[in-house]
Every structure is written in C-alpha cells, then in structure tokens.
Length: 591
Image 1 (cartoon, rainbow, N blue to C red):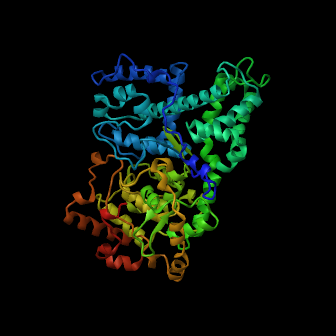
Image 2: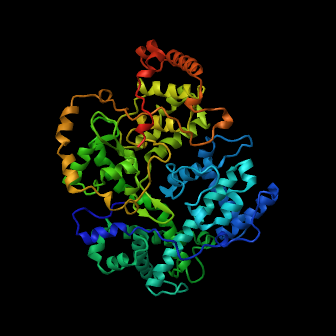
Image 3: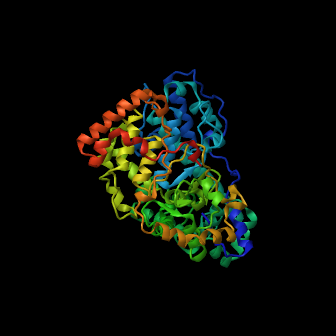
C-alpha cells in the first residue's frame, strides 16, 4: 500500500522502503528444528501418514490427536469447494502444481493474503518445491519429508495433505506474528511472563501495528513512535487502525464474558485472566494479533472500495480500463494514490498497451497489485479483497467439476447472484463475441472448458472486466512491492503532467464510440496455460491439436450453440468462418 502522499516532505517518503523483508527472530515449534527421523519415500503409506501426523502435531502445538484432527477437518471443509473442481490424477489426488494453486486460492479467498512463493505469476519448478515460500524457508524438513517425498510425487496429494499444508502455513504465520510481538515486548521492556492490564495491552497493540505495518527498520519505527503527528500523516487512517486493533481486544473480552467455558477450552481464559479478572498474558495478546492478520483485509476493504469506485467512475465505456492519461490527471488533481510509474504499472501487469485509445490502466489488476497491499511482510502480503473470488466461488460450486460445456457455463455465469455485491450496475453481456470466444476455448479442448486455465480466466475478465483481473502468462509479470521495485516506482511530476495533458483529447475522441467500437478486447490472446494438471483428462493445449480436428470440433460446437439459441442470428449464419476475425494476439502481447 502506498502509505505516503506525494506532496509530503522527502523525509516521510523514505519510509516507503521500510516494509518488512528480514527474517524473524523467534523459531517456531516442531518443524522449525530439523527432525532426526526424516521421512523418506521408502516408507509405506501408513507409516508415512503416522510420522507426518506426529510432526504436524508438534508444529501446530496441538494439545492432542483429537485437537489436530478437529483442526484439519475444519481446514478440509474450507478447501472442499475448490478441491472438487480441480483435476485429479488416477489415484484421485492433486499433483504439486495444483496443490500450490489450491493453497494460493484458499488464502486469497479467506483473508486476502498473498503467500509469498505461491503467487500464480511465479513459474512452478517441476523438479522441486522451490525455495522462496514460507515452507521452504521455515520448515525445510517438512518440504523434504513430505512435499518432495517420492511417495507423494508418485501418488499425489489428497485433501488431507492439502489441509496439512494450509494448517502448517497458518501456524507459521502465527509464529511469525509472535516474533514481531515479542520484539514489541522487548522495545517496551515488558517481560513475556507479565500480565497486562487492558490499558497496557492497548498501548502494546498500537506499537505492534507500527512494527507490523513498517517492518524491521528500527530507525523508521523509532521516528514514527516519537512523532504522533508524523505517524498520522504517514499511515492513512491511523486512528481508525488503532481502533480496529483495540476492537479485536474487545472481542476477546466479549468471548470471555459470553462463553466462559468455551473461552477456557480455547485457551483464551484461565484463573486470573477471565471476565472477572481482565488481565492479558503474552498468549492472549498473541491470539489478538493473529485475529488482526486474518481480518485486516476486511477492515481495510472500505479504502480499497473507495479507490476502485474512483477508477470505475473514469471507466465510461465499461471496459474495466481507463486511459493512463486520466489515471495521472486524477492523481495530480485529487488522488495522491494514483502515482505509480508507467514502468512499474507494466511490471505489475496493470497496463494494457494494445488499445487503440493508447495505454490503459486495467482496474482489477491495479486494485490487486502489490503496490496496493497495506501489509508487506517477509512471508505474506495483506492486499485488497479480490472481487473475482466471490464470482469464482459461486461458479465452481455450481459446476462442481474441473471442466464444463460452454452452454452450462453461460447459464451459470449469466445468473450469478454474487454479481449483485460488486460495483457494476449491469449484468454481464454474454451474447456475441463472449459466447464465440467461449466456444473457441471449448473447441481447443475437445468440447470442454477447463475452469482452471488461463483462457477461462481471460474470458471471465472480459465478462466481468471490473472484477476479474486479466491473466498474464506465468512469469510475465512480477509481484514486487514498491520497496522491492526500487525508487522508480513513482512517476515523476513531468511524466504525469505529460500524460495528463492528453486526457481531454482522449475523452473527446472516444465520447461517441460504443464499447465494441473501441476494440476493447484487443488484449485477448489465444494462448492457453493450464494452471492445474489436466493431462489425466486427456486435455491438450490448442497448439497440440491437429488443425483438422480443431476445425471439425469448432464447427460442431458452433452448430450446437446456434441450435440452442445462444448468440445472435448473424453468429448462427456465419459460424466458424468469423472465428478468425476475433481479436487474437500472440506472445508479444504478454507484458
């Protein structure tokens, strides 16, 4: 998230580079210490599961096997809707790439968290798990013993395995937060064993929020802690953020008062720390900050909505895009947030350079960009809620399979109830080119549309251009924070003014044109990339199909669509002959 307005003093701008990037100081339990009996693929399935559960229980700090099983069952329940639509191998399990995709979707949907190393834009390593994510960095023994075991690579990962991975990541995030909290205790010279009053906890939470949001730059944290005025100027809505954190503490008090037995069972209350004795241990405060991480995106959503609403107002043709000139013009006039450089926008995948109207900012890609993530830690980012996830959740739950026929998708997408929660006032217009494009996707895959492929994600983007991001090819864009990108992340005043001067001319030239006249799907590319492994279902990428088979299947599908009444009468007459006239761009357009 861009914390500092452009018109602030240069001293304040330096804090943009204070996002947390350094290792934590406290080791988590269990897996964080290399275990002697490293599990190998030579173990039989039952021995493998038994030793894994023992190690996982240590890592999660579980009170017993019953607690562990209960926690894993809860995670499985949350994963089930996405799991049901992912393609499986012959054993009914997922391969490693699909597992990573499932983990990413889960955290994005649950808490708007982007787990580092699990981003879809990052190329997957077929020969190993990788070294950039929280699991490889914090629990290498778990990666070696489980994720890279011969047993799992041969058999794949079942739903229980996926739950274990998610639960382990959740615990590691919780442990990371504990290390940040311990540093705050040290800053205030409070022993970890000391119980705090309510006032003492609120003071500690305020300091925690500064350190959590700015990271490990001690100089910056000290400067903001000593200067409340600079703190309020540097972090937008600081007073509301503090109120939110204190609200999480009040929620703990409420649970202690309303359900004493449940609070006791959950470890949130104990003798001397309950509704009658409002004292708070380190563990109590740790639980509060854990709740802050899980719910902070929902709290910050109003800021994201405000930003998106401003962009949507400039999208007069309902394309999910606005000219770069208008983006900068608004940034100069009223909105300090819209100041990313053209180079940075391109790197984030938020710039469409194929339009006849010139360079366009893609609204959902911009909202989801890491430049708008309010928290950027070593292991995860807290970003704006992805509006497309609600649409995907409903589509996936209603289809309940890895693939679907075009007619079924059109029927489901045309009646999604979750669309009513978005900023759009009009339902998606699926007739015409969008129906044709969906048929072509199916023709490339033997009559079925893979739900977890780049082409379907691209189709969803054009069906819901303000909600669903445009999907770039893997590795084509980078999820870099401003501090990671470097000092060129901000556009210069000269560049912004140069682009802004073109805003009026752009408006006049497009004022009388309809959306279709703007060639608004110019960024469409026919290149497929299956996010999950569909090989067991016999699906192939478009370029692997013989042209004769492609043409025959395409014509047959177009005839079926015509008979069912989808599309216009002109589409039914022209059939596949018009397919070549649709927007089609090759690899050069993946930027």
